[in-house]
Length: 357
Image (cartoon, rainbow, N blue to C red; front, side, top):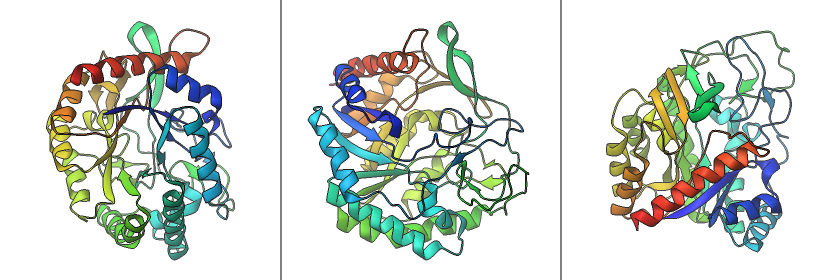
């Protein structure tokens, strides 16, 4: 098993590559979606809550990530002594009509195929993604972790309607009506699963040829609906249902321990054991939490409901040899809150990996 670090687009800098190495990482997972374009409320750790209609702006629909861009990023990562293991999340601008079954679906399928070919050309082995219409929503921020450290959580059900023109918390239609809560059409769970099966049929052959694994993230937060839209993987058994749609070696899991621990059914250790025995995990997100949806709080890696060392031991027992990253961490009271929180998580996971060996 290998320790990695996930970095957002604006953090893909030599200074953060050096930080990753100093914290013990050997691999990186890179986000190329610019979550932080637009309003104040966008990005994975800063989501709109309550009646707030803030959102981010999706990228340019005509500007796919180029092979040259991906190769340059890989070379920069390697120059820092690291390996670029994965790109995480498609830009909604490039594939939203796959999620919505919209009029540009065929074009967006070809976008994904093109991106997979380019990842293969760049030598990047995994593409992580979340097959979700509404994306992350309903999370709150507060002094939830030990010592009052800021972290994210959920303090109750959140299901305000999703405005038209919004997909995955990002505005994809610039002609959509401003901030007026014009409700987007709601899909049914059956429609969402049908769209997902069609997506796999359309793109997995390309992924196989490119030598790239598609790795599916579970829903975050794992509620049956968010913003009126159905969710794909909000209980552990749905992860297996997703895997059972295809036996392709390119069909894998972006296995998020925190999201699965937040689910109201199942057992996190059974889920870790089941999927690591199947050898279908692309890479692992590993954070700790207290509680379950719709009431949970993210904690320090050593201080939640999940026995992280037990998770690492199960992964080791079943021969998992991929990358583990701390996807979130509470921030700490210092001049560099994010870096300090991540450094603590990285140090704990590095020691845990050494113990598991």
